[in-house]
Length: 485
Picture 1: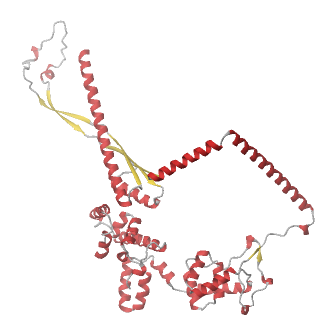
Picture 2: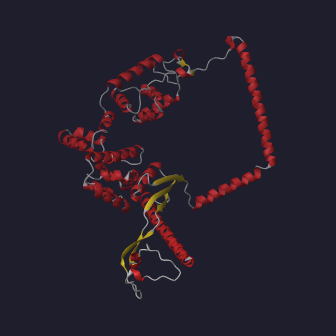
Picture 3: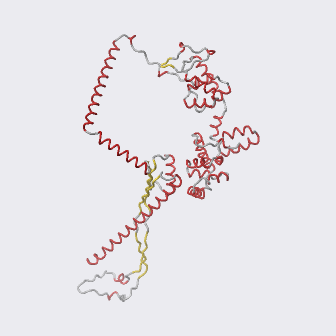
């Protein structure tokens, strides 16, 4: 019996090793397949040298299932006719409850089936180039989750940012490290360290001496005459000399206030109403001197925007006034600020108000309004069209501009936005997508195109339009001037 156990032990070890090898092979093949799938997709959409993807999976151990079918009939073996005819060796007792019937039914034919391992957990690690946009990296993460079919919390995905080097940059980094090491070896020697320590010690002594001197001077100042105390710190409001007709000018009208209580005129003008201010400047024929005063108080970006709307001669005059620092009469400043505030508070309508309002109007309603205005009031239609961007306007962009917009867009939201668009817009966008993106959009529309609500389509189109407005504000694209009116 012991001899038979020794025979089966190598066979058992062989089977375990075979199962373990099969499991390891299946895991390696699956990890390589998922890694290549995610890596190739990101490289095609966002370009190479931006991502490194590694996928690690855990799988169950493969096993074999044995199913017994029917009693076999091996050759050369005769079945006992009766259970009384069982023979045993002399000297061995026979148990009456040995169940001879079961012995007569052995052995059985069987079918052995290999059960492949199943997936337990997927861990995805993405290394992103530190120079790559973090918002784009977030979109790439969402794409990998959908592409690999990750399920949370079973699966995990981790993103880290590292600096990517090419061969030349890597050599430069190594050279810099070597130079730093050489510097350390040359200068951080014992004699140099002693010299630096002595210099630091004398610097501390000098600072301590200066501190003692300042404390001594402060005590003497408190004990002396109050009239001899230094004057408080004051700030003079930096403004300009008014025209002679305004009654301004003169040193007696200087505005002197402490730093913490200084008033900032025209602080109610902001990005939201600077267009209304420009309208007032033109409609009220405001003098260039008053415009100079207002511009000097505005934040630099708003002031530059106001100046940019004026002709070159007026800009030159304002520039001269700003260079000539003067003190302006406070009463005149209060009066001018009050007039501008009253004008803005009573002003209604305008392009800024229109843009804020129609941010919340759907693209379908905008199309309907354009149709009505185009038939009834061409002037109103022209003004309306110059201030409104709809999704179908993307067809007016150049190929390079459209590719920039598409690269900033989430692939799922872009697919949703394309559900109901004009054929010309659809063709324009498809011609600027790579094959991988086209395939992903096609699959998404085949699966969900008929179940997407009208509200979701409008929200997705507004999302893309917001990207267009952002890029246009940054000066990267130019759409409004290309829209045919």
